[in-house]
Image (cartoon, rainbow, N blue to C red; front, side, top):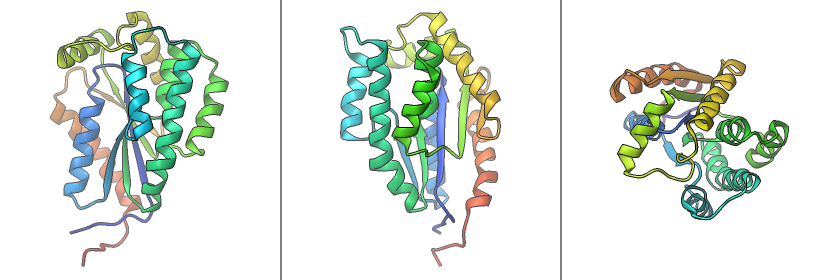
Length: 221
C-alpha cells in the first residue's frame, strides 16, 4: 500500500572512511520503499552525469589537485545534484536519502584541510539553495579501523583515503563538532562494535519517529 508524506523528507548520511554509511543509506532506502514510501537514493559526489565524471577526478585523479580546486569541485557536484535531483524529488514529497552532503565539505575540506569555514558555508548555501537535511546520521567509527575496512572492501585506497591518519582524525573531530552544534539534526550512531543489522535497526527507529511527523493520509486506497 502506497504511503504519502505531507512534504518531502531529506535524510543524509555522513562518516569517515569505512564507516559503512553507503551500505546503511542503501539499506534504509530499500526499507522505505518496501514500506510503500517513494524514496530516492543519491550519492555525493555523483548521481548526475556531471557528478559522476567529477567523482572520478576527485577520488582517482593521479596528478595533484589543489585544496581549493578540490573544495570547489565538491561544491559544483552538490549544486548539480540539488538542482537536478534533490529539489524535484522533494517537490514530489519524496524521501531523499543522500550519501554525503554539505557537512562533508565542512568536515573534510574545512576541518581536514583548513579551508576557511566562512567561505565553505557561503558556497554551500549557494549550491544547496539553502536546503538543509531534516535528519543527518553520522556513523562514528574508529579512524584506523575504518580505513582498514574500506581498503579491505575495495581492495585499494582512493585519493582521499591515502591521506594521513592525522587528516582523518581532524575530519572525525569536525563531524563531532558539527553534531554538538546541531544536535537536533545530526544523530551520532556508533558502529565500532555493532553489526550492520544492529546499526540499521537504530537508524530505522529514529526515522520511524520522524516519519510520523511527515506522514499524510494513505494514497493507495
